[in-house]
Amino acid sequence: MIASVSGEVIDIALDHAVVECAGVGYKVLATPPTLGALTRGSSVRLLTAMMVREDSMTLYGFTDPQARDLFGLLQTVTGVGPRLAMATLAVLEPDSLVRALADSDAKALTAVPGIGKRVAERLVVELRDKVAAVPGAAAAGVPTAGGSGPATVATQVTEALVGLGFTEQAAQKAVAAVSSEHPDADSSVLLRATLATLGPRR
Image (cartoon, rainbow, N blue to C red; front, top):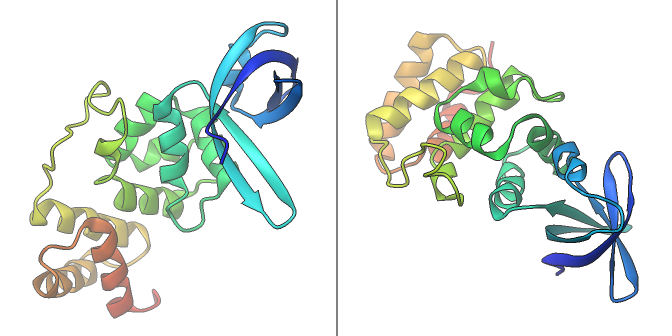
């Protein structure tokens, strides 16, 4: 696993840069803000995430650990892959993304091409409780200690279900029932369990 690359920038394109390390040029995909900070011929050190597929090995580059950790965290959500994660970081700076997730600001997330209302709601519900662990979260104004009790989690999940098309009454009833069986569940687990009881939206 390649965790970082350090060397001379020998080429910069719209979506990637080529960094020469010990005589080998590594193509590193990056966001426009990251690429805009690079200069051909200069030395750079980029933190990287390596994605291995059957037919390819791809490096994604970041200037700070917060962006790299968010890149990985976003992909833990169903339907979000490397391209959409990079698009999210291209539109929202890491601090802005952390605040949007922590504040359940789904509208801010829909500004990203490819993220609609449902995906935005899913991102908020599944990542709100996890984003505080990302480096730099405290600087972005996000509490690092767990401050969301059962009532807050239930409210989050209810809002997400309403966003997915269920009526508020049905959502509240289902969430209350599942919460009583799983009192310690976080928002992600509670959402999945509640969806399983509700079934497809009618």
